[in-house]
Image (tube, rainbow, N blue to C red; front, side, top):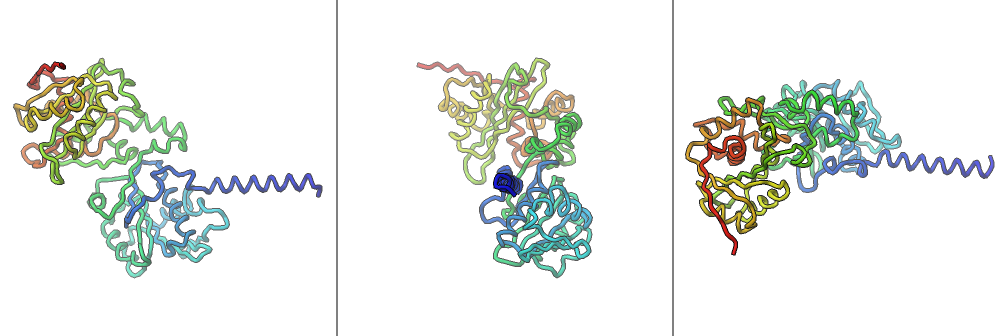
Length: 428
């Protein structure tokens, strides 16, 4: 072999090593939402749409933690043993695919186990046979598509009894959501760290034809909100809004002007106090186009001090190039206007006073949703949950986000339904 040929082979070998390192360098490839959260959590719940990269995230997380020696006894749980093997182990983004050969585990299909070179072991379980979890013990568990398990609650309780090895046993759940009782329970738990994501977060790695097809078929549908945007589709019997009446504008919506809106308003339903148990201040941005269709552009609601919500309103006003701020003054009176003016006296402001009950004000807006005249720029989980759980005469908690949305749509489409309190301010 000549010296020149040897140099060529060495260069080629070095290039191959670099390419291999890049292929398996998950920390550089992963989006921030695919990396484990910091802090002292026990359960990491990834609630994301189809194609987000949930399986890859689960497999890569296990790969790195096994390689670091952090976890050695792992449970892999899917709807069935077949799905665990097909998706979590042997799938294109499964455990066998994400490992370089030197680190790859050996899969013993008949024994339903994976064994790593460093001695770590993963066992496969199907959710329908959750009783098999009586006895084994683990320091880590990965559950995939948890929301579709028929015996999800029973499996979850059994698995918790098994996570008793090591100093910090943990569980990773990767799933597209469904409004199941156990998933709602997990979302309300302080031990659960939540990561949310949509199909479109991973658009760069998905086939363009697939993206085009799902946009055509699902974007303005309830199913699309669940399967693409990972929204929990909850609603109550007797609620004024149903999930099927909420329609979505095709994303991405980067600028309100993309819709060629004629007017944009920001509606405020202010909280009267600011402490841990206070109501939220509802802040909703909406616009109307030439065809008299209304678009809910942003939900900025939350628990804020008066100065905080005033600053958020002012920032949104100029960012959206809004025409007016509309605020209910029944609770806050002149204080609402004083807050807005103290932040920015140049803002166009209009007070509205509720002379009728929430149901009477909200009913015509719900009808506009049914007529297909109101669209959401994207799913707004908390706002839509309030809308679909507000039952006239029964709901006790103030639906501040919904109230702000009602005032915004009223201002844009039903101006005469609100009683305005107009004031003229002059700057000296």
